[in-house]
Image (tube, rainbow, N blue to C red):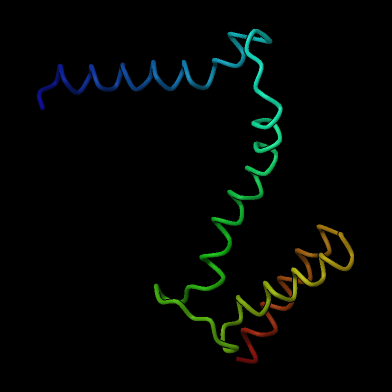
Amino acid sequence: MNAADTWLTIVLLTVATIVTRCSFFLLGHAVKLPPKVQHALRYAPAAALAAIVAPDLVMVNGALQLSWMNPKLLAGIGAAAFFLTTRHLLGTIIVGMALYSLLRVML
C-alpha cells in the first residue's frame, strides 16, 4: 500500500465516520424509526454493558472459571442481589466493590 492509498483510506474512513455519526443531526426529524426499532434500541445500553461486564466476571487469566473460588463472580452475584432488592445504583457499586475486596482477601 503506497502513500496515496493510505491517505485515500484515511479520508474515506473519516467521511464515513462523519456521515454515520452526524446523520441524525443533519437529517433532523426527517427520518422516523419504527416503534419496534425504538423499543428495541432501549435495551442497547444494557446489552452493551452486559457484554463488557459478564466476560470479566467469569474469566480468570483467560480461562473460564465458574467456581465458588472466583471472587469477581461472587461479588457480581452479591451486587446483583443487592440491586434487585434495593434498586439503588450507587449502593450496588459500593456493595459490589466491598464484596470483591473482602472475597479477594479471603479467597
